[in-house]
Image (tube, rainbow, N blue to C red; front, side, top):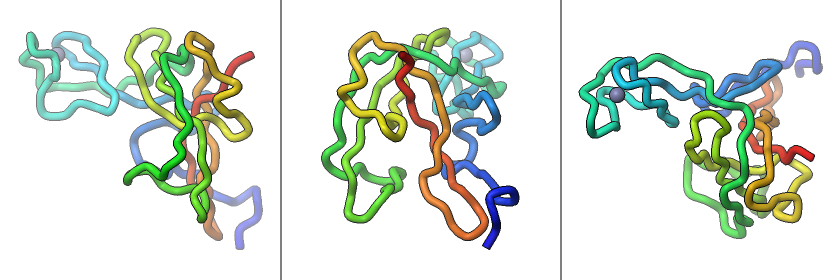
Length: 147
Ligand SMILES: [Zn+2]
């Protein structure tokens, strides 16, 4: 059993977000038209006016404003990973990213619920442990309300 100092922190879903001191979602940018995508675009640009096929990874805004939110009373389908058995309801926020102005869905940080959210309130991206095994903590991104 590893102790706290040697535990490895890894994303529960590979390639969707960084996990450093200032975690961020990782999308990509079309090198032809500059449009940013999350999840990442591949093969062809989703901008109908662009023929771009080359993309560069891009870290997205770490803050945004709540566009909509809800309580998930039923377990979502995969790739959602249940945080407990039996299923525990949690809050979900659709957040418009500060710079990109795209809406990204995510769970709300531990300890916060829909009572802490309203449309237009500001949130910050954090990473939290979804589950652990003997060696690793598996992390997910969540939206944390800013006061
Ligand atoms: Zn493009």
